[in-house]
Image (tube, rainbow, N blue to C red; front, top):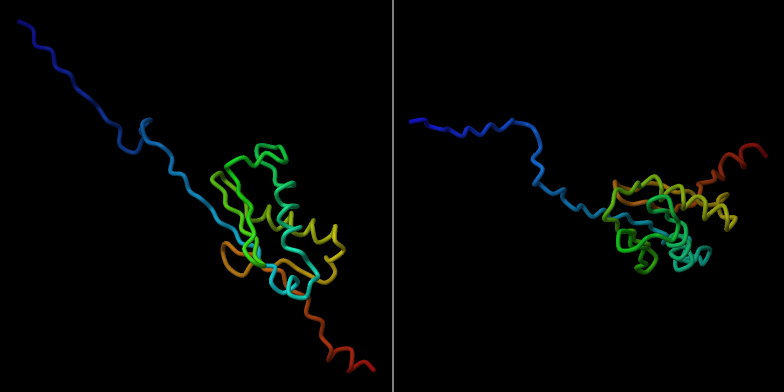
Length: 132
């Protein structure tokens, strides 16, 4: 009589093939409050610009359901189910400002880990008065 034993070895630390990656939805906010209140920048135009220019898998206009660009008042929200860079949003925002000839007056500043804010450059009035 022969006995057969089945031994199952599990290597600790190796990922299992049955696990699925978690879908993490990233949310980025572009706050255009200051220039929009002064009617320098139109958030709806900016939203359409982002929808046209954001590249997914190397192609523009390929957002599908992976990336959603929406406007809430003076803020533009970008929701992404795929890996998406906050820095890429800053690049596109600066490109839009340059196209609208607003780059000399506005700058893009990170106010927290998921938000960019459009602010005016601070010009020191005191320095000009001292030179006179």
